[in-house]
Amino acid sequence: MPTLDPHDYYVELAACFCRGRLGLRADAPIEDVLDQGRRAGLRLSKFKRNAELPRVRRVLGALRGLVPTSLLDVGSGRGTFLWPLLDQLPDVAVTAIDRDPQRASDLEAMTRGGLARLTGLRMDATALSFADRTFDGVTLLEVLEHMPDPSVAIREAVRVAQRFVVLSVPAHEDDNPEHLHLLDEEALRAMFAAAGATRLRFDAVLNHRVAVVALGQSP
Image (cartoon, rainbow, N blue to C red; front, side, top):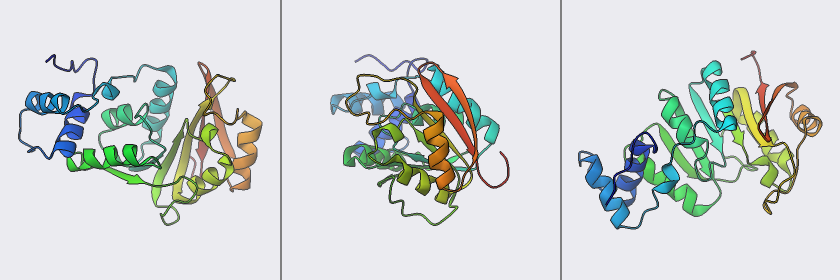
């Protein structure tokens, strides 16, 4: 079977996923691990590199500037932002949550497979089971537009973050049936203000809107 090219895939992350799903030894050769994963039918294509997507590049740049020690990634989904985040911010402890049981289980498998700085949990963004100010920062990346009432998730994110929230939402209407809202700057400012956060900085990125929300001391 063909190997995964490290120029095109997050090979180490894929290997952690395979080890955790299949219970493989940590010292097993990485190509053997990936081969067993493919033979078991594990979908490794989701680990394809995508850090050059404009919205991903902008979010990563913002996070590098903020220098977080811990992050809560809300609604990690297929890993569009999570994989490059883990790859490019190797010193940050990341808790990744998703309410989908399969996606949450995949995240937990990666921790079992050797990615100790990742904690994967099944959790709803509107009812976070964390104490106030648990994390240095929170990311809400392409999740708010999927929620019936995004203001609740925003309030929870502000509650558990110490310094900042980073978000990304579509900037234009699209044909995704799962998108329930088109959130403009005015709507986002109003929802964050209701949650007690008023310092928002917006950037327009190809078809998306990225914002950094400062909490407490300015990032």
